[in-house]
Image (cartoon, rainbow over all chains, first blue to last red; front, top):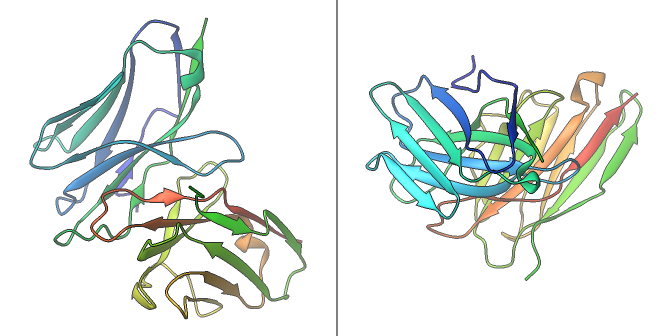
Amino acid sequence: DQQVKQNSPSLSVQEGRISILNCDYTNSMFDYFLWYKKYPAEGPTFLISISSIKDKNEDGRFTVFLNKSAKHLSLHIVPSQPGDSAVYFCAASAMRGSTLGRLYFGRGTQLTVWP
Amino acid sequence: GAGVSQTPSNKVTEKGKYVELRCDPISGHTALYWYRQSLGQGPEFLIYFQGTGAADDSGLPNDRFFAVRPEGSVSTLKIQRTERGDSAVYLCASSPRGGNEQFFGPGTRLTVL
């Protein structure tokens, strides 16, 4: 069963606009969430993360929002750039203390940013 | 510095054969993870090492899969009697002690004919 779900397989956005990628999870034990970006033939690259004690984390053009009651998180990219075109994976973990164990991944959303 | 490296980048084998996939983590990283990614799916956890020992091997699909990390650095994923369903990209990641992200290698694409 898929404990992390990304229900939109693809998203197309014009350059300069906001991209919003969504993710839902079912396991209430998850307390740490990450977003990865993946280009073809490369491994996933870490983008941004958020702990369950926060509801927002920002890093430059990237902001992640966490709604624990809805078990939902989203990644906002503003402004979107053509180089952002990639597959974005949402991942979750149940951290035990400070140890980051296994990650549960969604199926990914293909973001295309067009000029 | 050097990232996570994986060899080979591609491996084609025949059904029933044995394969070994190698992962070199980032120097000094204590944790090492193996995932596999099938087409259209996200990475799926296989096993996680903390140092030399397997801290969590609950993702290994069956006893044909085995992984070792004898000196707490390089790891080898071993697959016996390969099946066509084992075809996937096998990803390795590492993390420093207390780290809050996993750094991934480029993966090994395994094709079982």
